[in-house]
Length: 371
Image (tube, rainbow, N blue to C red; front, side, top):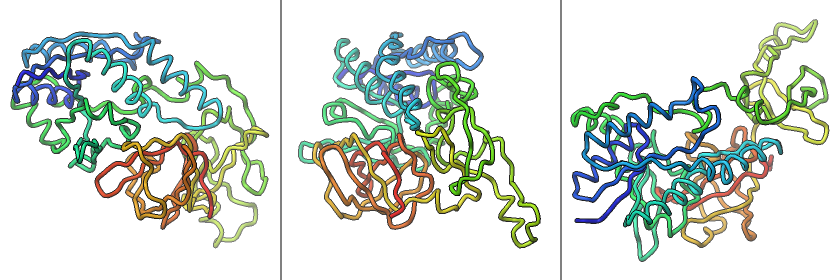
């Protein structure tokens, strides 16, 4: 076949099987280990050193060359700086989406092309299909692992050079393939959380970069129920770490007791007055949105989807598909309405739209709406 494919080899089982399958198919495969983070690299939470050792071991087993490349500066400039500014503004960004668009399918892709690559490949669970000269991003066969949500900001040029060999496989099948071929990481635990934070306590990490600015926690009615350490350290729908338990009103009757003891959730941020708005109960109306407005829309085909056409959307990863319609489009702005109210629609997160299995693209949520 002689086509050269550069594989992002992370040290995990998914990218390892990706490289193995391509090698078996006759491609000229080169492994590339990306180092994207250098701050506190020696901490107990950073696994990059072990990941590199695993990647080198895999490359040796598969018999492919491997190169390590440092994209830490690009990552800090293109991803982490945006991550911090978004949190400082009270929003909750998804840096993994930006990392895919700016690092894995830009800096990495550019480097791979300099190595003479025809394509790049990663261990993402997604699929690419060409139809009438246009490249489509599709959901993976394994719906529990589908990662098209994180890839929705890729464009035609990027998708034309991308391969996702795991798109039709189940995760269980990937681990079986790895074990059968003697890959040392066949049972390695999947990485979780934001790539540069890993398993470390999130609030502790963020406090090293953003200042605390304590203020009041209030109910929508204005009652003060606690104190927060800074609006940047909370996200809509958050339940853990609020420091307030179920509050029972003095003299409340038995009928009210269960309501009074329901857990608290973050419902909104009052940036102007530095107040965190909290409510009791998972299904409180303040946590539900029937529509949303979004900015910085990106459509994979290069053309916006149809207005008022039945689509489905996700407003966060691992959310069930929600039937919806795009009700307004203007430049890179859009409005989306849902058949059923959506829980904790969060500014800074992405709304990603699908037409069946085809990922259309998405936009960054500005605000959830009640109507």
